[in-house]
Length: 165
Image (cartoon, rainbow, N blue to C red; front, side, top):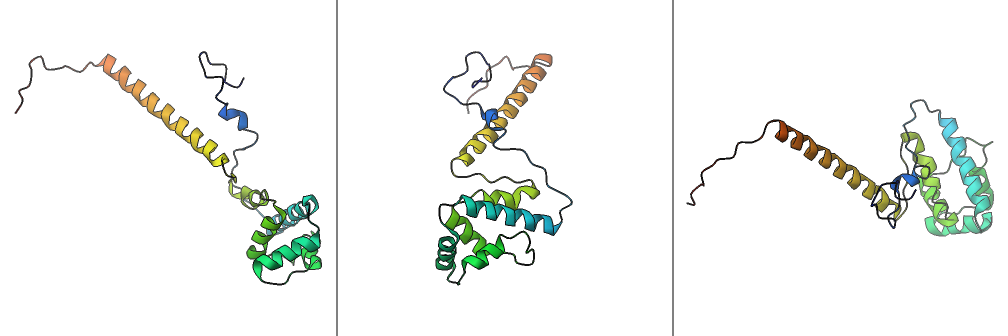
């Protein structure tokens, strides 16, 4: 149910928890081997290159233009070849590669081992809204706790009026 099945809930409001599959909660990886990360990045870049509407020569030209450093299609293929772990792309060229291919999801590949997730544009507002809702629930719980305490031990209010000074 979009409203979580609550009575009186606004049906126009989406369910924040419906996005759980899109925004998985991750735990940092404690044991990571550099070759695993290198292989994952190369494989992901290869996928991005295949999915990109531009061919490798066009992507290489775009990277050359962005960085001011010559890059050929052959060199680009070397960066995406899992069989060549000694050839790793530098961060500046990686940024240019992401921009040239439009594969912003590659950023997520870089940070997932640290338990992080990349949010794009308005997705950050959704996360911020969830955080605010969590804070509201915590404050409501504190208020309920104080209400319970006040019922158990009522505050004695002075019966006389205080004078204005």
